[in-house]
Length: 137
Ligand code: ZN
Image (cartoon, rainbow, N blue to C red):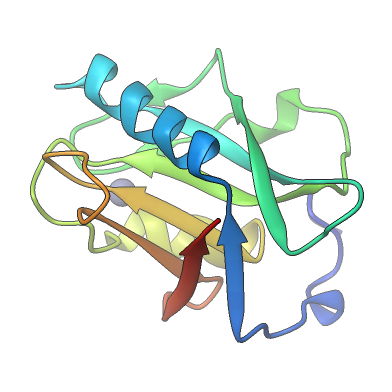
């Protein structure tokens, strides 16, 4: 039993949605934490479980140069949390090996924002590290 529930409950989705204000916040946090990484959790709305509309910033996040370390054991169980977000202090939004390990253990969808932290410089991934569609609403 992981923080996000059993893996067998994971469903493959064709696409996710994120609100523009939430994406703007992610990019803003990425910019303001640079050259360190910023890390947080993705939360969906109560009414629409496909729409990510909030991020939970992890105060205890330890940032490294190539991978984010999430202190997930500090958090209460919350099923509105669907995955993670972190920034890369580089131009590559590609997940590192540590990122892929994190994705497999926690959550269904993950966002990586890379420099220059604009609407074109982030990518979303599934738990197995495959790119997934995410539309901005
Ligand atoms: Zn990373």
